[in-house]
Length: 223
Image 1 (cartoon, one colour):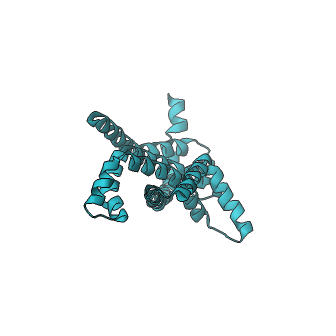
Image 2 (cartoon, one colour):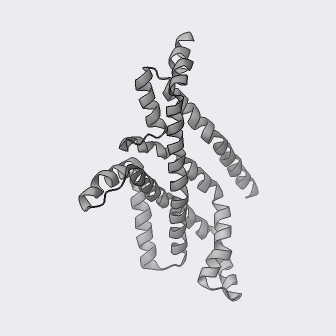
Image 3 (cartoon, helix red, strand yellow):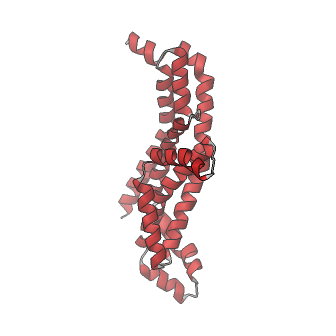
């Protein structure tokens, strides 16, 4: 036990490197705060466009969703960061990470919103037309509120996964939490910083994970 504490809970090491971990946590949260609403907005746009029932557009959107979901987000980041400069587009590490996360997750969010919209009975759309609503008003005020309620649990679950993927920023040398912990480990010759990073992720995400679990149970109980 003493050996375990010395290697994974060394307070001297932690006191020495905690500012580095806080800096990494700040960048991790910044990436999540920027990427999350952009990915949700892109996915929502995909779901709404699909709901209009334009066949060529729907075929394109389905291909877009499948392609982006087929690429691991890490591979997508590498392609964006190292390939785009050959096309004359140089992105900062932060921009490349956000773009990779948004593109990858927009496919997942798009599929979630699409499924939610399809879950709304078609009679709702017909009734709104009978009341004089146009297509945009029908989607905005009738379809989307019901669709989002139907897929709230998978939306929340995917948002948790998005936060976890911020660790890919380490691949482009951004000092997010995981990379900061690895740098701190090299400075202290002790794995305590990595253990501390794991604890920080757990404390950050566990309450949200419990909320998602309760939400899923509540939705299942109402069906």
